[in-house]
Image 1 (tube, rainbow, N blue to C red):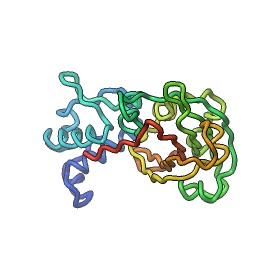
Image 2 (image 1 turned 30 degrees about the vertical axis):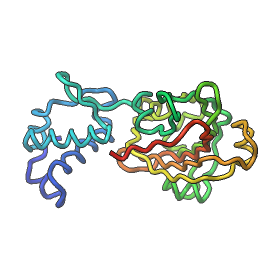
Image 3 (image 1 turned 45 degrees about the horizontal axis):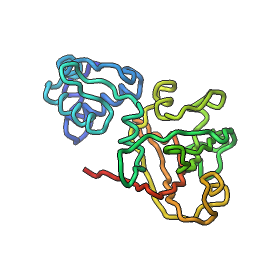
Length: 244
């Protein structure tokens, strides 16, 4: 991991702390540090990378702002886990119009494997002939079905998922079982009419207005690893986006 400062400075014109951040993220991608594991001290990282401790601190601060690491006063810096509390506030954006947010329960309706179609190949950057895992599930808040989800995953990244019980917290499963951390997502929101299938799942009339969230989840190295199409009933709920 040791790299002289001159080598780091020739990586490009980005600020040095951003280059250090990229190197640390590469370690996360390579599994050098597992979710929940403590990173070496800032002093040790600075010595390993041949930069100042202040540069390392700034790089770690940037990673903390991206929810990739967690700073704990007096204890150090830890690789972030995909626990329910983190996912609730970082990735789950449907919240009640009044009252505190809560993490939904999930029930798998179907799980299958098949050859990726053209749209799936395009979204997930897959080669022709690649196979995908498709999960259909319903998510409920306080026993009320509010989301019908269709999830598509590259089968090569999740080789035995089709044979296991699918947990509620999928991002936690990706991180702990497969070493794949979801770093960020891209979402497209659109108002649509519920299909007959989704209406039956959600207990609403076909054609009823719903919120469609089309999400692409990216790993630390920007590889697309999940496409998730969510059809959401927004009675007493709204989509909250915090841009701060």
